[in-house]
Image 1: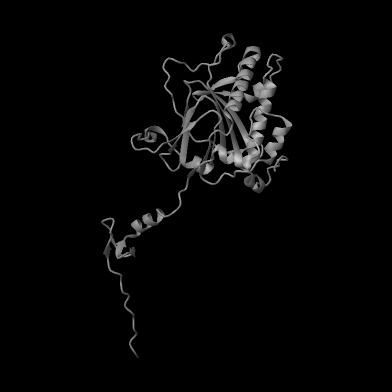
Image 2: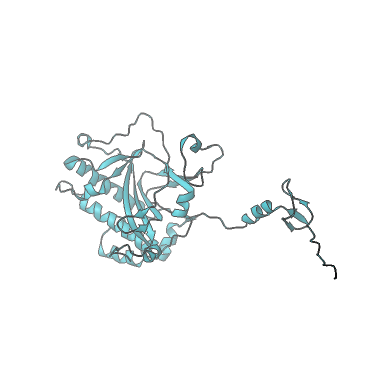
Length: 323
């Protein structure tokens, strides 16, 4: 009986990595150099496109595409036609979009003054609709909207302005507005670093995935920084950041600017409005007695949204307004 032949498997030679001390057999060669599997994977990752992108859309780009500029305080029929006809600027995955001067400076100042007037008039007649909220203040939109006082002459125009603003965002950025917020800032106010919830919107069952915010009034930074933990869970002393070597992105938000980011950004970066550290100024909400002046210098109007493609793909939420 002939002897069975068992081929000898030739083992590749052990080679030393050109980048690290590893000596392996499962790496790759490139330009006469050997790299271990780990270093080769690290090198290939460097060729991948970045996960996040900062996109700046300047006023001139908007003007080239639109017949006129969006006006937050306008509710005229001509403005409605303009809103319907604006070009859409879809929000890409992993994008932070900065739109400097989205609103003309005078229009943005009118918006600020209108919201302050509505808040002040409501404060005098029916109690303050602005309440402390996470180191700054927020406007109770339900309280303002349900105000019955004839003395609050600015309220109808303020509510109409906000609705026009949100409709403009929906049409221009191809989104559905799900939740709304109006934040009031004194110079001593700030917003601690945090992640937006981007949760499932309970009334509709639609997943929030976009944050859009407009600044009216004084300029303030909005800062982004990476989460210390990839899981997003940062508790106790382990959550402290090393400020000496931590990447930070500070985006100055001027009067009339708009800032947008999506849930991909929100999962890996937290954001906030840094503390200006104004000494000797408290965080108290003014009462009706001191209604002569407003302590607030900046207002941010925020909407949490979903892309219309997400809205269309969501099934069984029973929302008759789905579009």
